[in-house]
Amino acid sequence: ERPDLSDTSKFVWREWEIHDSYVVNDDGLVACKVYKKLPARRVWDVIMASTYDFAEPGFILIDRVNEMNNNWWCENIRATNPCAEQSLPPYGSCLLGSVNLTRFVKHPFTDFAEFDWNEYREVVKVFTRLLDNVVEINGLPLERQREEILRKRRHGMGFLGLCSTLTLLRMKYGSPESVQFTEDVSREMAVAGWEAALELAREKGPAPIMNEEFTVTKEMLRKRPEMARDGWKPGAKIAGRLLHAKYSRYMQRVAQVAPQLVHELAETGARFTHHSSIAPTGTISLSLANNASNGIEPSFAHHYFRNVIREGKKSKEKIDVYSFELLAYRELVNPNAKPGATNDAERLPDYFIASDGITPKEHVEVQAAAQKWVDSSISKTANVPTDFPYEKFKDIYLYAYEQGLKGCTTFRFNPEAFQGVLVKEQDLKNTIYKFTLEDGTVVEARGDEEIDYDGELHTAANLFDAIKDGYYGRM
Image (cartoon, rainbow, N blue to C red; front, side):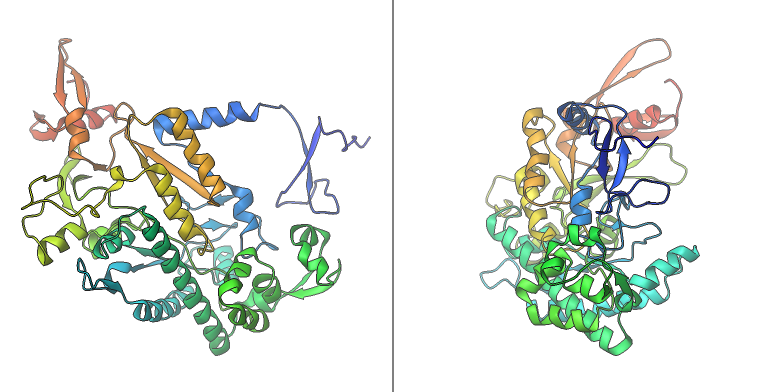
């Protein structure tokens, strides 16, 4: 006997990618059985408490991800890559690349400092061609992966060095003018990228999905009511290029600033379905960009320590690191400049700002400014002080939702739970670690104190982590 699917205490209708063997209504929603109900507030508080203490889990608005997906009609995304800058369908791949924004600043730290927008747009177009070429040599191991990337040709271009660039331009990260610059640099990347998508489509052909014919369904009309207003009815055939350029929410936004471009993309089809994505870029920022700020992030600090793993050493090694903008300022303006200095001979300008000088709200506002023009997503972490109140912490996530983000991640330094890869000197000095010796004696040491143990020198913080992780037994 078929159950009563109208009984909302037992069944709810939800989006679900798989329809086979399920009950599906005319709008494409799947009947889901209700096993248990939990108060939403309780679930929210459990997630928030865990995130506050352990920086996990991250926060993703999967319904917004799907609503804004350029391939909204043929994909139901359920997950992202590990750093969350790429929302991907089954067998989707991260084909990523980043532009170093610091390279476009002229006359840094002066009254004449400016960003070279013309060169930036040209580099974006050339880089778009490069990323599109990488699709041809993707080297993916599974046939389904290769089919997926060749059919849609999605890639994710982003940038690194945003905070360093703002500093070179004498702007404070998180200020209203920096938020506007972030939106401008993201919008110009988007428009230049889609101009390249049209040029490449005319030169080499659009992505195969653009020329595919799809059957209009009631589910499509439910998701995009404007299709019905345009006269589309269930059963009609429609080209992928129209569904992509005319009816994707993101491309509708691009049409607000480049209407003719989007009109031509609807006629010709784009070379790829997705163009932008801002990755963490931690490794390439450090190794290839002289420690320019990572991705969209502020500089962690202008002088800090990086915990690195050395071959043959059981604990991590503490390495001094300096920000790109500090090194540039010392080279171009004041060789004696030091973070935190109070005397005029060594003091840095107030626009030198690091992650601990930015409010969580400002973190969200910068990310929101970029997300408006990024068709995939953004890897971003809002650094939160250890003593930041829990009630205010929860508000960060609500604000992120209100600002239109697809996801949000926070990091609050909690030495009881973990020791980060990047560590501020003050955090180490202010944290006391306790070690219990074999005879029961308890030894206390500041995080930055060096301890000679097992023939090696360790900071107390890194030795504590190594013991906790099982690299050593009891002391």
